[in-house]
Amino acid sequence: MSSKEMIAMLLAGGQGSRLGVLTSDVAKPAVAFGGKYRIIDFPLSNCINSGIDTVGVLTQYQPLALNSHIGIGTPWDLDRNNGGVTVLPPYEKSDNSEWYSGTANAIFQNLKYMESYDPEYVLILSGDHIYKMDYEAMLDFHKQNQADVSIAVLPVPIEEASRFGVVLADENKKITEFEEKPEHPRSNLASMGIYIFSWPVLKQALLALKDQSNCDFGKHIIPYCHKEGQRIFAYEFNGYWKDVGTLGSYWEANMELIDLIPEFNLYEEFWKIYTKQERIEPQYIGSEGKVTKSIIGAGDRILGTVESSVLGAGVIIEEGAVVKDSIIMKDTIIKKGAVIDKAIIAENCEIGEGAQIGVGESAESKLNAKVYSFGLAVIGDNSIIPAKVSIGKNTAIRGITTTDDYPQMALASGGYIIKVGDQA
Image (cartoon, rainbow, N blue to C red):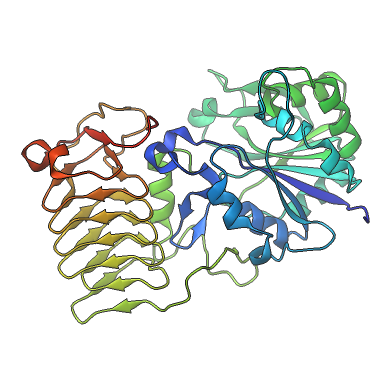
């Protein structure tokens, strides 16, 4: 096998617990985004657009949807004989568990995979951000500075910096200090969790820390390299970058796509985002159908009204139904006369005739106020909502519900109905 200059390792194991019922059955990187994509399409497309043709995708939590989406990598032109995309589930059987524990432990378990390509550089990526980035430019920066490690950083407002790992760098962008989620940050350069390592440096650090529990890049590997006197540099990125880790930021990032001049442009010729296209039928808008300022997926049938919303493929909006400020994922049916306002409805759901979702005043979620806020009604995959019920804001529903689940035919704001499993 010929050696590669740089290979990418994409960490896609995240459970994404702050996305609530959206990630009960799928890993966060497999969650739909922007109508036709999944979150993982962005880093994968960045790789191919940056000339990186060898990507190891490390999966862990609920990997089924992710594995079938990636397949052998054909949509990203990553179905190569030498390199290509390889899905790497955890396989090391240790005494205590077979799971990856920590981001760096996941990479360590795949040392043999990396060694087989004998790379000069290894790019570490996370699978749950929406952005476009040329990793080749970052590699050039790494080489120019004769760096051992380069960390992509993003300037953030100083009042938000305490949410991130923050780096302090000198005038040559050489990193002098790190602060992990500091209470009083001394810099506004936040780590994006994107790293380029010179391969010998990464290998040495992984082997040195192999017994560290929950071994993590930000917490362990980078500080170790720093202590060892390695040259660590901050590569400043100024493009669009969004962590869609909360329901609010996920909803906002989708809504930003339908702005007249979107901050994040999916229509650029030279930096395409690739995805697996399952449906090829055209959309259909009926004589009474009305669509304004929305993204509509392949095979959608719209006989009602859609305003300021993002729809996946195969969605059906029946006569008299109204969908506003919402995200409706693929193969969901909104029956006649239903009204949906500021909701996120996952794949394969059925919303009954005349149901009303997102009504009334906001109230704090009784299930998890940190997750279910932002005034959104959130409905997980494969759920059924019966006809004529009304559902408030900051609500969560998952599973096949019947009218018996709704006293007085209503679920008040802040309420929840979780019918399947115990994960919310």
